[in-house]
Image (cartoon, rainbow, N blue to C red; front, top):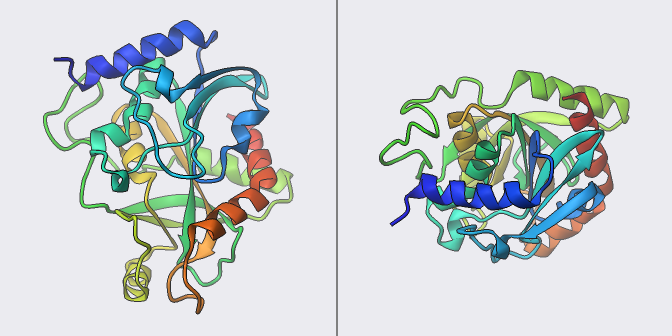
Length: 273
């Protein structure tokens, strides 16, 4: 029976055979943020269902396809959609796409997500560069036997989110006159939204935004020596910040509203890599 490394290699081999020039950079697109994939030039589109072992997502707002194309003269792989632990996937499966990108040789990965705003200075539509994270998923994608072909047993996580890439994001935002914020992202299991008491606890821990993704991929990418940039689109204020219930439709509507600015920011960042 094939192990995780062999499955990743099998998927990577299919992508290599179909994508033309290999990507230098990967972008994982969060809920409602898939428009960027449609802007790639000379694009090769590969539905996840056509790639061996690639997990299929079940969440609205995740297209479920890999698009490899060109942005600002650079070859980019856009993962339009991801899977989550709350869908019933184990951590190794959640980071499968990230592992494939590493085996294709990408040097940088930009992880994006739709998140709830804990920091009361934020508003819907704020773009937050992730400076650090707190893992409250209760799991780690590196748990279990370590495969040295992916990376070391105990990878350092002092700087998960590359200072160089964060600076590039700030420069790109400044050139676009696009305001961005910085903060700490906390990842939780979901799929239920958080309670007001949990949000107060997360705020006390130093979190500025909350979501249900990104952290496993960031850990797996650093394990493989890939530079990581994280960007959260604050699509709603977290529970208790405003006196109204949270609904997924609000997440999708806000993500669509800021989609053009978000796509411009990603293009500016990639141009500066």
